[in-house]
Length: 295
Image 1 (tube, rainbow, N blue to C red):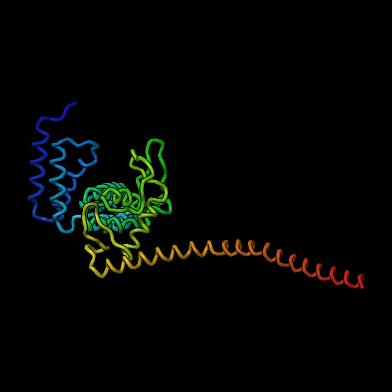
Image 2 (image 1 turned 120 degrees about the horizontal axis):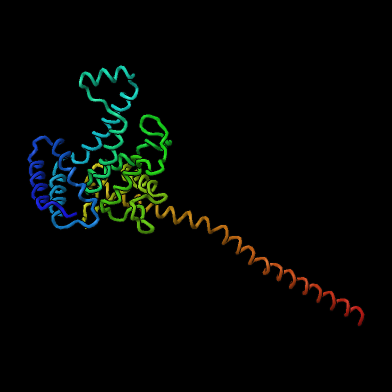
């Protein structure tokens, strides 16, 4: 089935109206919906036109990524509160028109939001994804309200926040990423050790031990944005120190083996010396005895 001939015209009209929304948070939410086009493997020219315009508008708004972090945390806090309410309390809230934060609503929003961030290559986005890389939710096999996460026959459980953050941060175009994919990843899954590698990388960024930059850019970033010259120099010193320490550890590991080899090599020389001494002594004794017989 072909696309509606007016699809592009209608979508571009919706996009232009979203751009005009005065409230930043509302504008971010509206523009973020257009980035879903980026999940299409081979975007055509019309799709690219809408996607890149929405992306550029979003990245120009301060808080474009922080909005999603704050919203996820706000929803998580509320779902934890509402999940403890009695059926009577929930019914009363519904009758009064109050919003109830259901578990499924939170789960859907957090997954979509963290996935959307993969299309926002900025230092702010890296910081937000770094925040969720350290998120322990789901690590114990339980969801946000403490229920066991189970695999269904026809579906896989939603990725936990740290997993989705890793899947998104690797799409941002960071130069020299801490994890190199060993092969094609057509299903957008995660490789073993990938989450741990990104968590360790972010920990070093957060602690000021290293910086990063995007492919094609010369700007070095730290956890809070562009890094100062002092931070870059300190990170470089720490990196060199760690490399030297690593080399030192390798040498220390090899040294005992080298010493053992030298000791083994020295043993034949020592034995040869003893044999030579014995030969000299034996010769001297033989000459002495011979001289006595001659006398």
